[in-house]
Image (cartoon, rainbow, N blue to C red; front, side, top):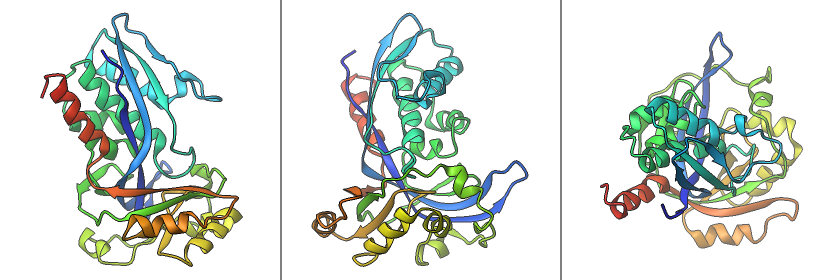
Length: 287
């Protein structure tokens, strides 16, 4: 099979509210996921010996712990296939940035290998597999912007405006447990219906903790807010500012402080992964 690059897009949490905490430590939330047209890429070559080989290992992460390898093995076992794959990952999404890079990688593996191996599983079944790898995996598998509840796995497709975003990284990585473990984190925001939330100014309950504990996040958000509505995505560390046009976003990108880095991308309600899969299936004669 020719090696083609399957997209693994980043996501933004356009809002994020924590509505409770479960006995097992997980948090209940209400959030709005939207993809952006920027992300990692993966390529796949089928093998007939059953081996799963990550040809681009990540420094400091054992293959057994890598979500790419874990997703491939999970699908292999679930589908009962004897096929394997060589997988190459091109990283662009910063780790620990709240952009969902690892979850997106896992979802792309499930969606792509389901097609490459001809497993024939529905996206809903792949999403059920994905949630065992991470709470954000299902939204990437389903491929549509969504309002999410539970721990992020109960999804309702929505159509938020497809704005342009300047997404900025303050140069620090924020481990999720640092935010969720903070005693001052708001954990009792009242649940509200999605139509109410979509008409209310968006916010992120994790943002005050990230700003308090990470000076760089505080500095970058304060700077961005001078130009446009801006907030934290996920548990951070990335922050984003929203604009109506690409040129307006790029003008601010050009002024960014030297100690930070960023990129401009458009919010998209249909995942680039799903658009690519449609083309791939047609080309492969499987559509």
